Image (tube, rainbow, N blue to C red; front, side):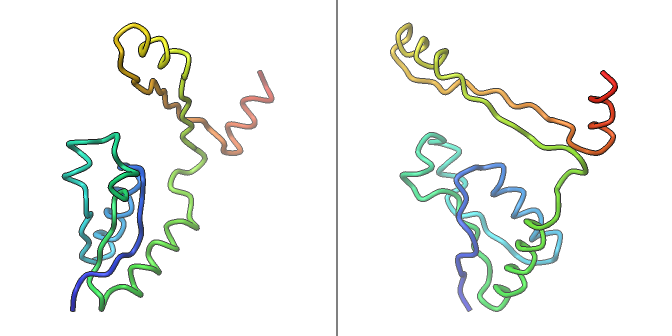
Length: 121
């Protein structure tokens, strides 16, 4: 009657999206280490990441929900790409003495309509 580990994530957004999918399916979920990671966000690997915990009796249903969510595309025709600029990060390290990862995120259209628009250009 306790909690069981369903999945482990090292990205906060992925953990919260998975928790939201489980809650939408009516499954109680607890994101362990979420409060600790909000205080120390660069220590995700050291603390074992974000752990999704579900009640033991709902574990099989939760696994089915997560597997279905991984099979389905979350956005029709879009994907998110992230790029880390290490040069800028090392420059910040030299200037202020602290390594700060400098990242950008961009949505890309990968649907058939997007491919047709790229062919016309």
